[in-house]
Length: 125
Image (cartoon, rainbow, N blue to C red; front, top):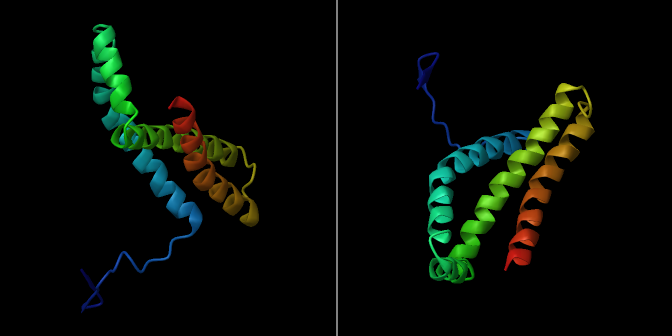
């Protein structure tokens, strides 16, 4: 990429986004993860409803570390997208649009989503 005849080296690891920008990117990532998870979740539902043995297999698999990690990721995506969507709705209503408030709400979403996902993953175990 060139700007004024000079090559620009853009190092994405050195860009310091504000927390609202990071939360916005995570909101998009969580939406993509949820859309991509739909076929997997439908397949898992179909497998679990086949008979009692397949339900037991699925329950045992989700008791392992890989199953819990996938469950945590799915719950994080759902909760982050929900909480960020509520935040954006409130911002559209001009609630929390001031500088300290939008930062606090972005931090709240970024911290609450993985915390709630972890709690729900532990409860479902």
